[in-house]
Image 1: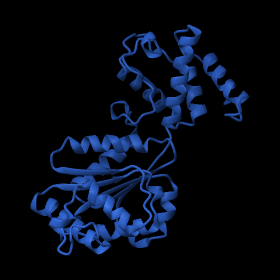
Image 2 (image 1 turned 60 degrees about the vertical axis):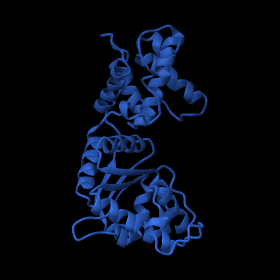
Image 3 (image 1 turned 180 degrees about the vertical axis):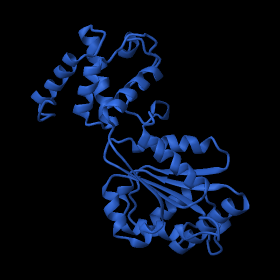
Image 4 (image 1 turned 180 degrees about the horizontal axis):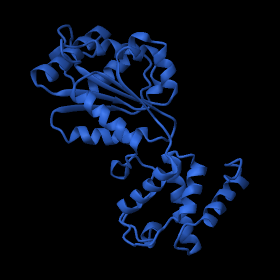
Length: 290
């Protein structure tokens, strides 16, 4: 039997997979999601979400995709690892993932796969015009790990953002990346000027850490009225995780496994300190939070 079923859960409550069902919307995440959805509906063009490692950017992107797919008027493409060596590879990826028929949209294509960057740009622009203007659909590109984008790829995105009517951008672009993305963008003023909405995700406070833990416990089907995590344990989890959602999830997962192995029924400060001491002794942590 899985450890979580012993404790009364229907499913694992603290998986690190970016499951939108288990995504707790903090004030930061809700503000980012709501504003991006508004920008997309208005077809404003470019939104940028920044955050340190483990602040929930990937899960936020999956939540955004789910919201968009529930609407029939959105065409969504998601890039998880945007490492492209040159413009041709990047455009080819967009063409392939958006299922663009190059022969249909490009007058110079010979159908033999010998397309140039200009051919791909022409096909993409005509595709965007067809979908956005003729069919009245919103084409959206969401890029996770956007700090990996090269300057040439960012420049190509800038060019694509120039595809527009008098009222709207033809492509809606959402970039989610670590904080170093900011320095990359700052070096390209013509791209910076196109940002319609920008937001920085911050770590959680103690109260939001508690709410996140309780949300995931309830979402996983825990029905008992008994508390699994005492408040002093939650405060310690917040200190050792520094409020980063991914680290909170990892510590809670370890704590629940420890409950089963030690035949206990509540995570208290003592259990958490034991786990933290283990990491200090093994060199994974340098000090014990006070």
